[in-house]
Amino acid sequence: MIKNSELILNPDGSIFHLHLKPDQIADTIILVGDPGRVEIISGMFDQIEFTVRNREFVTTTGSYRGQRISVLSTGIGTDNIDIVINELDALANIDLTTREIKSEHRMLRFVRIGTSGSLQADIPVNSWLVSRKSIGFDGMITFYKGREKACDMGFEAAFRKYTEWHADLPTPYVVDASGELLQLFTGFKFIHGVNISAPGFYGPQGRILRLPLAIPDLNDKLEDFEHEDLKITNYEMESSAIYGLSRMLGHQALTVCLIIANRVTREANESYHGEMEKLIRIVLDKLTIQT
Image 1 (tube, one colour):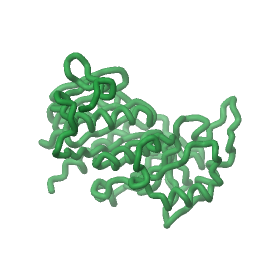
Image 2 (cartoon, helix red, strand yellow):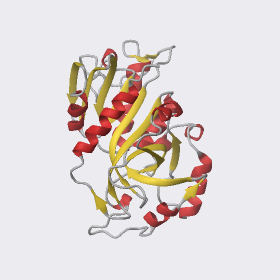
Image 3 (tube, one colour):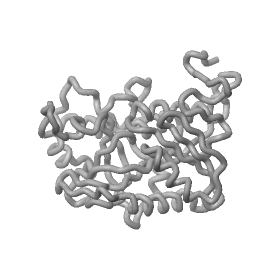
Image 4 (cartoon, rainbow, N blue to C red):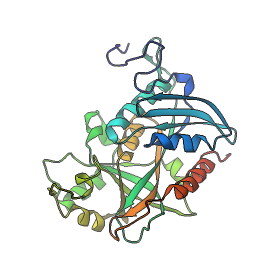
């Protein structure tokens, strides 16, 4: 039995941070950083069952084209992803009454829709970037046993060697997207690439304000790195943890980002909301294709 201190429940039986109960999540869950984006996505649903709010975590479950879907805001960063994915998995695969792991595994599909900055000059603003792999600069999944089975260790080794990775930084980890979900997002306007999930927006992504960078040429190395015909395409802040934890827990995960800035050409689209709504609609359509 999982102890109360390890699996904390609220007085109403909901899980601690998300304030959700097991029957309130769909098998397909869209993850967004911004709580405001939950309302935009759920506004496209045919029907809404409920909305639950606690801190930055806002969840709405409803249906689109007759299929049940949840959309949940994670806030920013892989630390929040650790909370979100573990609590969603607990809702699916732990009996909250007996505190025992269920004998039958329930697989969830996680699709992150976010914004991102391109690291390649030929990936323009307003592109739709699908992450085939995600590189984590945060070190979060290294706290879990057996992460090597979930990661692309060859890619990691090549990356560390090329960048001359500093020993005092967290070890980068590399995780693949779900192959099944990836197949849904091919062709059309989708560009496939490799993203980096940074543990910050400024220094960890090579931005300089008042503090100098410890590795001032890191972005140049990222732009030039290539392994098995794959190049690093963009920065964001959550995908590596989503991919890593999902793979280790037996779920599927994929990230689709709207490129709102190009770090090489220095272009940006501050008024990206219309483009984001187009992408959201396409993602919903892809996720509800009848097979």
